[in-house]
Image (cartoon, rainbow, N blue to C red; front, side, top):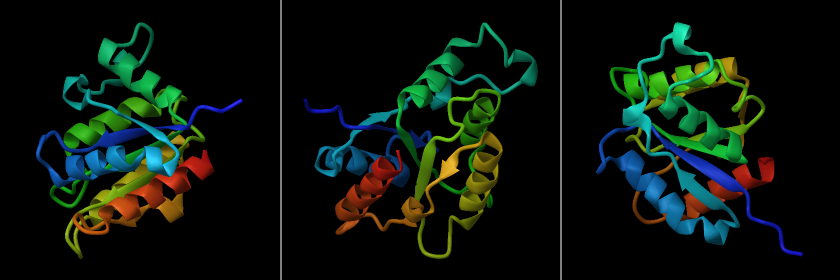
Length: 168
């Protein structure tokens, strides 16, 4: 009996529709089947309320329920986030803050791809590593890579998805 391919949740840290981060995740979506996975792209970043620990209880705000459900239903998570002013954009840090109080991401395989030009993006990566360690996520080091968009990106992203699927 065939098994369902693992689902990898794609999280973009950018609100810009035409960002290089969105482009990388669209490419990951396009190669998912050939990597033996199914991808789901989370699109609710702009809808999340500002994180307030006083609101982190049932009933949770609807957008937070949607985020946590998407994480819970995924076998693994792939993040592609830009670096703003040496760290993650505030909207994406807000998303990550909403994961701290839940258990959905705990022990879940997570990786990121950095599509920033060489020499950039290290601050975002460092912040991801710090915050994800607080959430209990399992960082899949081999799949945390820099990807140059353009020729070769499909193969690299297919490989990343495969590594995440194996970790799941």
